[in-house]
Length: 464
Image (cartoon, rainbow, N blue to C red; front, side, top):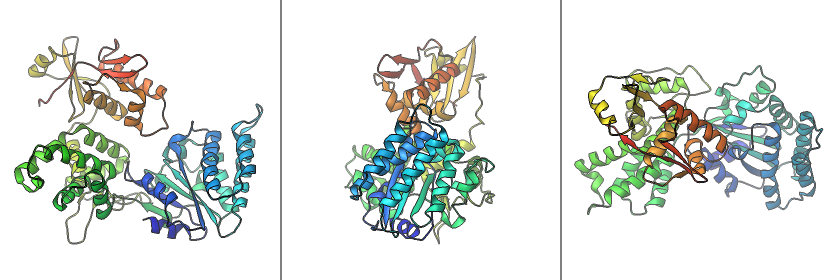
């Protein structure tokens, strides 16, 4: 894939849209490309992680791009004194600076950067990672500036935009200023849909975690994780924990142990959390297509830029073998969706004497498999399916009740990934979750001053 990216980007005037569902390896690929030996002297790649942006303003975008460019230019021994001065003028604008002037300063800085490259054969490649939210919320003027720079330097500037969905399927209204102009930089042939790691790379990742894995175990890991980097790491760790009590390193080949291992994976909270993230990175049409696929219904793709399930890496199709969901763990997760009622936004009363008796010993019960909370209110037993980030937060805290607390940074990373969100976002989510579960007194989700949050007294329910 690194060589393929290089080949595409050495083609004159080309930019690329790199897309995949959550944590399929876009960021890893772009970071490797930025540091790889396959990058020739003709390409100057700059990796920019937009999770590091301060906000969705134009100035925050311009500052981040230039800040990430400076060390790359220095590493290539280019004189950057003037570029540094332009960056400083951008980061410390005058009190009366207008948005247009800030954008103009960015364009002048980019002119200077491209001039510093010297040879007209050299190309600056901006690797715009985690670009989903900026693409939706950046002022249209920023997109116009990016388009104008590309028009001015068609052979010397290229963009690689990494998002969950292909850029032409991201859904921003093309009637907005700058949107259609920016989209025009990407043709259908510029859309690269990234699936999971191919088998040999997935095996290499697994062996980095456990060098003693046998060929049979590597095959088992690939079947369960489908080359998804995060799922691969989680499955390997569970494999190591499960087999640590056994004498035979090839226990996965034994039928009984195989069933036990699969049961461990099905119930593992971290694996289900990652599957939840993958599921929520898909658009509704993809979710429905996957549910239909498991029911034996073939759903035709309505959105050509989005791509089919196979093109998106969600369904694995190998010649001579039946197609399947890319990872067994994700298939189990989706099958649970087929047997779960549609989530609701409020608690509902359910008649369950066994659950009512259970709740007499605990203020709150939780089914981590179905992501449902149970509690009593005014003499009634209520059920509340959790959805969205509230479900991720509740499960994360539930799994760590034995710990003194979870830090806010830890929780932000668990819910939203690295960077891009603040403690204020977390506080709002916690407040909403407490409201949903009736924890206004903060006795279930407790705030540990200057430390973080701790969940207390929630028992696991596995009833029907």
